[in-house]
Length: 85
Image (cartoon, rainbow, N blue to C red; front, side, top):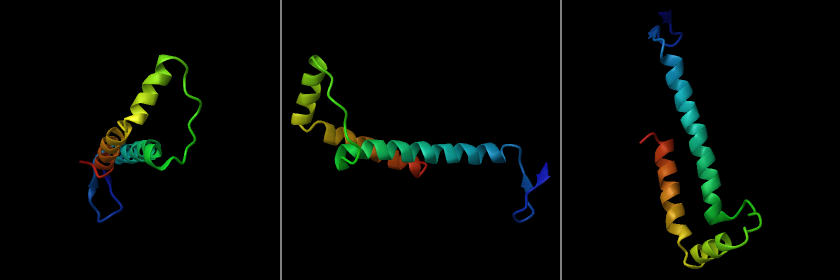
């Protein structure tokens, strides 16, 4: 085992893997948080709606304000991902 430069403790072989996994978790959490928060803040422009039944289905979901509770649940889950819960 190598000596860790911080407080002379021994560094385990999984030390780097743990921090790289934590960093990856933070990056993915922030990425998901940004793209889901566009449901509320509208800072990323949406492309054209698909034609046909998909357009009608999305229109109904938006008119019924169904996407707001779904977006709130997604934002809450991403915040919990970021705080490691």
